Image 1 (cartoon, helix red, strand yellow):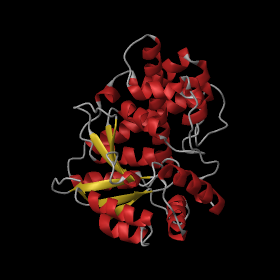
Image 2 (cartoon, rainbow, N blue to C red):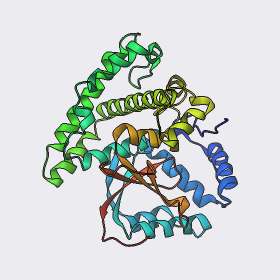
Image 3 (tube, helix red, strand yellow):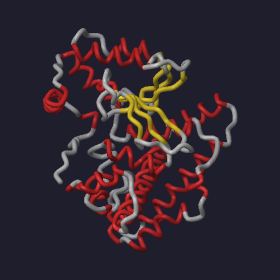
Image 4 (tube, rainbow, N blue to C red):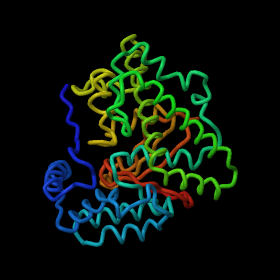
Length: 328
């Protein structure tokens, strides 16, 4: 099976007009929409959020309708559709928090939301085996030594186990610290402070990526042993570039944060790794039954829920402050 995966060959802040034209052509062929200079400006604005002018990883809250008016000012079909989408979402959520637009945005938005509402350590993080994952996996799969860390891409072979163990410990420590805070305001302040520390932030993302790899290995082995697996797992390993966990690591997980972000099937993998339901409002699907997507499709009842919003399945922002229940 040949799978088509969109990838960026350069960092978000270096996107230029030629890349926009290519992206525009792909989007128009799939959605039959037209874009003009206003949409071009909007796309470039989103992609450049990680530049030096945009320092915050997660921006302060902003009224959803105000955000929509600010970002989509034109009268093109796309701009009108986006504004209507935001109006619909505003009946459920009051505010949006803009997430820094690099190739970590899906991980950043999901982790920020998870920590913001955390009241305890997840059960799987309390296990004694949690911090032993790197050592245990490396003892079985030698190819994991080729894992690429953002901060130390040229590290010596053999250091990977200790590095990732350190990152997993950091994730556990930060999760525990935030979940122990009872005051909602103080909890939010702690999360805001954490996501101002780039060095720690990127280490947390590496920990998440490794948890995704661990989950992928478990699902792959379950399928090989004829155990029941979720549908997304079958789709993931049916692709030419991710037919095994090793290929998934080389071609996708190692690229996250460098030349690409999370794709839709990898959002499912992230949800299973964290045992969280990731609910996403996909505004380009407005007026269809795919406006709201759940990862996984059939969520576990006891999994906490984080809610994100996207205009294109590539960049994700955060929805906050639930309004009174209304029908979308």
